[in-house]
Amino acid sequence: MVVSNGCQFVNLVLSMVLNLQAYYRIILKCIVVFFFFKEWIDVKLKWDPDDYAGITSIRVPSETIWLPDIVLYENADGRFEGSLMTKAIVRWDGTITWTPPASYKSSCTMDVTFFPFDRQNCPMKFASWTYDGNMVDLVLVDHYVDRKDFFDNGEWEILNATGMRGSRRDEVYWYPFVTYSFILKRLPLFYTLFLIIPCLGLSFLTVLVFYLPSDEGEKLSLSTSVLVSLTVFLLVIEEIIPSSSKVIPLIGEYLLFIMIFVTFSIIVTVFVINVHHRSSASYHPMAPWVKSLFLQKLPRLLCMRGHTDRYHYPDMEMTSPEPKARKGAGRRGVPGHSASQQRKEDENQAWLAMLEKATSSVRYISRHIKKEHFIREVVQDWKFVAQVLDRIFLWAFLTVSILGTVLIFTPALQLYFSSP
Image (cartoon, rainbow, N blue to C red):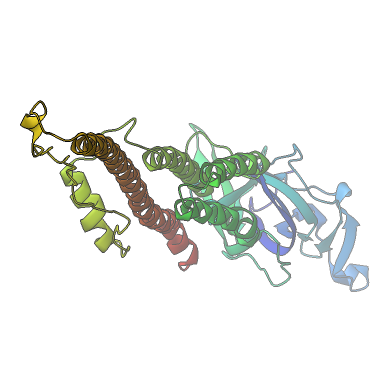
């Protein structure tokens, strides 16, 4: 049936939104329930009210009259019409008003660059399926969707909903259409509590690894435990994060940053533990510039106490007394030398030999003490260098963690809190 004036008036009024589903992978599926106001003129349904007892309007089943085949092009369930066949109001002048409640499932591609602080634009294009513009024209009555009966959704907030009329042409005909664009903003509270805050906790827990003493065996265990926890956490939230090969979601970038952060902390921890357990048996004493840098300059810059556990002993040279020539040593064979004097000299000779032996023992003990002191000094120097490295990496990783978090989330937060 051809409409008399070739014109169909279409006004879309959004009465309520029952559900705006979350993404399915990278496709946003919107289930929208609203009243679809349609009005047109059918000249075959005119009558004179005076001939019918002043009746100016009637309500008839919509199946018994001609209906415009206005369908949603971006439907997600294969049901192009999506309307309940309610009764239509027919007035005496041929004006037909049909306002069926409609349930449409529309799908649109998501931009997950700033997920979960993202905004989505989901257009819904309505047009006639079989009629061109010469037979059925679409007139947009109101550019804004009426949201007075809108029910809030727990995951999405509608920032704006506007309509726009357009048309496309081919070689012969032109086809009008009406597109309603819904600007949706995701409510990020759920993802903040269960994704971002745990990631922040793992990030700062990684920083605390460098606060543990290096002689404790739990230093590397804590780093490994954080990495395992992050891996398990990624497996759990894999179904929550939208997958896309075009862009990396914001939360995905942050999780990747934390993963690299934790992995690098394990590498650094292994290096620090290796420095902590160095000794003179496997390493030479550190170079003078290393001592000056790590034992004197850097501790002052890092507000650390000086390296005081170093002992310096004066070199002790143990010299054995030179045996003096005994009086009368050349008179051993001289007649008149008494036997008692000879025994006394033999006793002195024995005491001198004993003294030389004791001196040799003291010299050995002295060398052993100096060697132990040298070994302990080397060990303590390397341990202190490990402490300095721990403090350096503590501040470095803390700075990187804070700056990385701020730089990753600042652009998304600025866009999210900006005016629609």
